[in-house]
Amino acid sequence: MPFVYTTGTPPYTFINVEQAVGRGCPNQPDDVKMVQLLLKKDFASPMWSHRLDKWPLTGVCDERTIAGIHFFQTAVRALGGSGAGVVDQRVDRARDTFGPVHHSIYTIIQLNTIFEHAYPIEFANMIDGTGAVPTGKVLKSF
Image (cartoon, rainbow, N blue to C red):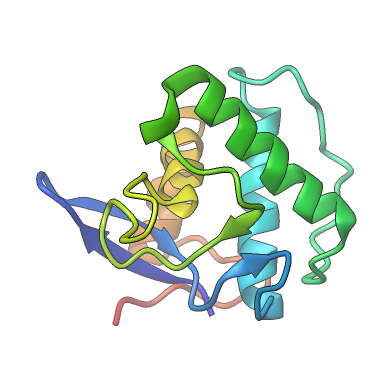
């Protein structure tokens, strides 16, 4: 189940996944729905020209979800260079700001950052618990 997590200096609070989402990952439905929601919102934000308003939040990590992860990672890397992220078609749970293997910012943090900038009120409502995740569950910190 997605949860609120804080890491880094200065501290950054964001919505994290419990388990990885993407090709060859556990793909827990609640985590997949959160990634699908962040992708949908990020792609529909003014920063992107894509309109995915009809993209269903199914909780199934299908080819569309994997393609969305791949597209997002490719775009972020193209804009920010190799340190901006890795293109591995996965959204791993963040345990810090940077991953221990690739030493790049976690995709889940990048998804949150764009969502927060495009929809600050909706993001704040999800973080403080007044907004619900797509499953109807309210996020809770560990």
